[in-house]
Length: 143
Image (cartoon, rainbow, N blue to C red; front, side, top):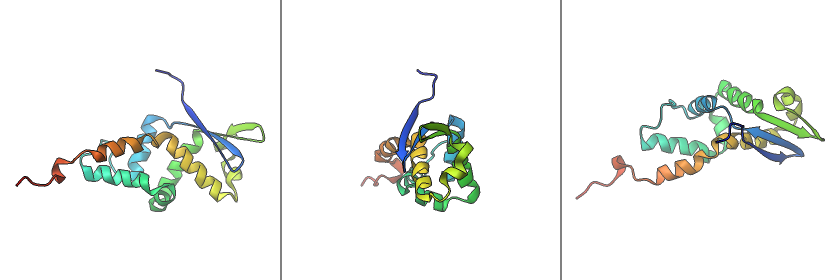
């Protein structure tokens, strides 16, 4: 087990973004906020499907369903774990966020999608496995 944060990087519109995973508690709090669920866990297949649908919708549709405060919480958390390298210089994204994305909304959305996938991307395969399991409450009645 490594005690150093893993990062992923991606070049978007000429800038390289290096993103660390969100801290676990913060990631759970944001997940609960975005999905509208308590972080205590999934108590039914319906809740699991609801969470899966959030991930399937994509970042643009998810943002459209979030209130302003939730969007700010998500963006602020992700910019705090991102470094941007442009023209050979790397700086924390939080320190240049507004200037960096001013007039570049498509790049902002592409970064947001990528940054969210760094932390939440691994949930996709887990959700697919769980959804593939048959829910006893939804199984056809024996005749």
